[in-house]
Amino acid sequence: CSPPLPCFVFPFQQYIVRCLTDEESNHLTDLYRRDETIEVTGHGHVQSPRFPNSYPRNLLLTWRLHSQEKTRIQLAFDNQFGLEEAENDICRYDFVEVEDISETSTVIRGRWCGHKEVPPRIISRTNQIKITFKSDDYFVAKPGFKIYYSFVEYFQPAAASETNWESVTSSISGISYHSPSVTDPTLTADALDKTIAEFDTVEDLLKHFNPESWQEDLENLYLDTPHHRGRSYHDRKSKVDLDRLNDDVKRYSCTPRNYSVNLREELKLTNVVFFPRCLLVQRCGGNCGCGTVNWKSCACNSGKTVKKYHEVLKFEPGYFKRRGRAKHMALVDIQLDHHERCDCICSSRPPR
Image 1 (cartoon, rainbow, N blue to C red):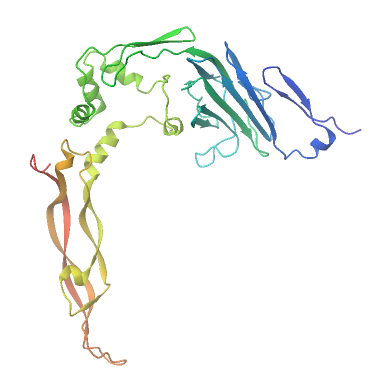
Image 2: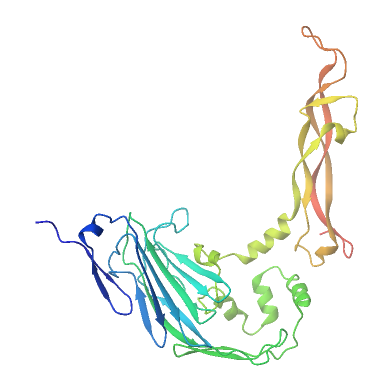
């Protein structure tokens, strides 16, 4: 008596129990595909088969969620989340992926695997969103995933301009998110950019904009919000250090770096040849970038130049003997300029 053929339960709108036939059981490496469209009119969920236990191999399941016009779809992952681990921080094998769908484009909101952290809450940009789950024919994991979905009322300001945003309130699963209207004088993008350039830390910047609520604003930066987060946000293992990134620009944009010089051209000698023909020296490179307030009027120049000796082989034109000591060849010391410090020289202020 042969063993019973495997049966899978697929969690679509109506649960489907599917048992493999004899022919299919001999092709377990083939991918099982299923695509379903769901009209989102309330609360619901989709999940990996057998959740919270190990999911089957060789699956490609797709859910296309649609809601009414002028609504959005919210996705929230269950705290029990675990798929096959990533390889080199890339989800290659088993993963769940969420995509924003519109008439003109598709945007991947994130791809997740492993067990380290639960994916964040997502709100679609249109009234359509796509969820894809794929498992390969090797390792599986548990508990898989479960995603709760619901629709969100979406209100767009009737006459919002680029410089004066009105108050916007959206009801998300009974929770009200409120963005206060702007009553202070608005800044143009150029003026705002110039203001931001004056601060070295996020803390000082937020204190300038919101002296009363800057601490709360700083804490909320790293909390899950309804706004879209880039893939780098979801993949990173720790909070981004914005102050360090800002300091790195100022510290390293205009710095001495390796530069290759041709010795004949550098020494302005036309009647000799050197080996090596070129050497590495330290010269100011890069630009002032965003390291200064008026960076467009700044140039990266040497703030301290020193001369260093280099021993090279010098050849002079003439007859070279195959035997004996060559009279036209010798080891010599040459001096080359090295830049030990670089400064951003700006027309409107002294070097920094």
